[in-house]
Image 1 (cartoon, rainbow, N blue to C red):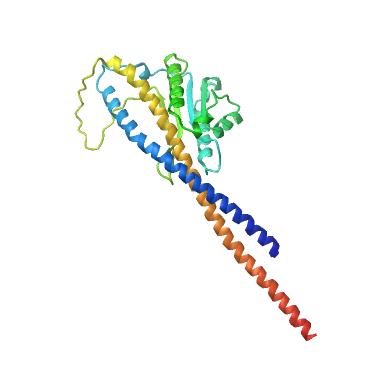
Image 2: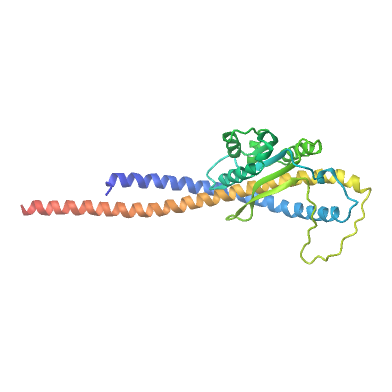
Length: 289
């Protein structure tokens, strides 16, 4: 059995770790509330706008846009969202694992034809370890989601798609469902897939939209804004998922530290009781000699 001094030292060490984990949980929880409010305010607007636009664009053959053009995939761009820091459970590891699977699927194109946009230092480091080149440094976006920076990235991807520099753009991120659940999501960003969405209680009748001044002008103005908004929404979504994952990871660490403290306290008391018993036996034995 370990000595009293050793057990006491371990108790102090675990207790300090528990305090750190508990403090980090409180910080992550505060950030989560802010990020959760931001994504919950944004998602309904983004989803409703996407629903209306999707149904409008799929309503008839008269609607066309260069952003919906499907062509043979010769070059692909992948935007991957992770975090700048660790201590958030499997948040970053799951993203890198999924990215590896996606890269394996596109390996036939040649790695020079796969353009990677890593949002967050952890995934950027993962890309570097794979021996691949990132298309830029986007670490700031992961910590402080900004519509301006998200729109700048979206505009760059739209420009490359329109100029045929890339034939497909995909997004890879953790979707925030709740504090406990974050869902790994892999979806196509460009070309836009206009599959009509039917909401609960909605009839099958196709809505006849009246557009002013013209459909072409509407699409020219609205589609880039929708795509920029989509990029910003995904950025907020990933940010909320990160803080949720860190909150849960620190809660688990705190609980484990509490359990370990109880075990060490029992061990310390047993060792102390054994030491006292040995001293008593020595005293009794000495008096009887």
